[in-house]
Image (cartoon, rainbow over all chains, first blue to last red; front, side, top):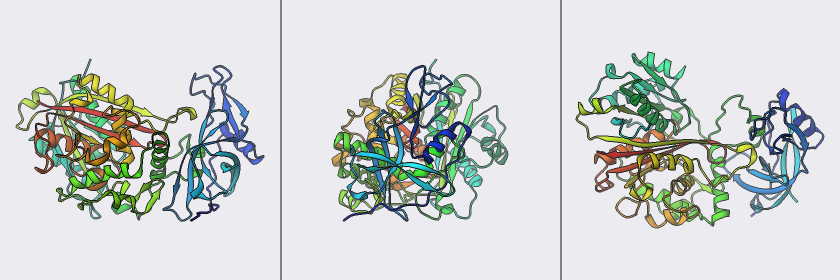
Length: 132
Length: 387
């Protein structure tokens, strides 16, 4: 039995000055990460301060947009079932997301996925992932 | 400096209600405070230190201090979600050891059963920096624990049947608790055949939703000498906030991996010395991961450890949550830390139900996990001894 993923209505994320570039890039279909020029570590979710060395001038870098499913949980007791998940990007950081455009019953940990941006109500699109 | 032997739990009280539509949250706080003071043999005027967390209405500690008419020298409103009350006992012991107060009152109360129409719990903590990067993906309590369970199953081949044993054990204990929300003994089959809420957690892998509350009184050695109750001494405590670490995390590990060793070292005991354990059981997976991280078994072997009734009092090696826990008895205010302390104290006093009372129970552990395993949580471990 298959459970096809369906689009949900998603409330717009709150855009703040320090994350505006992330959401502008999302509108262009690009996933941005933050990298620390001092300790060279990438982090997610994006912050002006590096959570590893506390340098205060982190820089935006473009992610390839591909990764693997680290873990997931298909939430079935919901109006529209959906796959809550974490994806580990090729760059090595793991981010909260949903797995979409697939059969929710066929999702597996370790599966390769690619970013797709899904629209929100009156806001920038948000990064979700579809199996490759 | 250590809190070992510096403070005692003199009074405990668990509100018998599980549904309180006609009472306010403040009223429930006051009722549990009265209950714990009576249990200790103390009065409100003896209290000079007060501890509460996010469930306290209004401006938390100040609003409740005014409502109850407390005259305080010390106040602490540390908020770590459902584990806060374990942290409070530790902080109360610290405050008593340093002379900041002599009789500490800790209260918890809430009415989620009366106030929530149903559905999955979605906590909005306000304009958190993570919110724009998380809320669009619809995190709810069940899926934020589901992702940890799923990863644990993937990494360690843990099964739904093994997780179910945690609920089965809790239900064996709850049958003797007339106040428990769920009093029927369930089987592994009952759990794995109950409706799926959020993979891999079934309805019976989840704790109950209940109104109510509880309170604890912590005192120093001098005050304890003047009281009649059995002496439950605080031996050690640990706390640890675990988070997503900038996207470099392991969701199969909880903060217990840090709070546990801190508490065991302070108490000078090891997991195999513990006769009874209260383990926060928001979900079955919470117990399994916590037991591994506290060192009751090796990492990844929690599934085998909890199976075949190993957590059932009188049958298994580690009796746990003999009141039925959050899984069957009570999860007041969606915060299970307080009831964990209370049942551990009952066990140490020999006041648990005779059917579940652990023989010669002289050393017990209580552990809380506030927040969620799949995002960020506060872990707190408390070790207590019957003196």
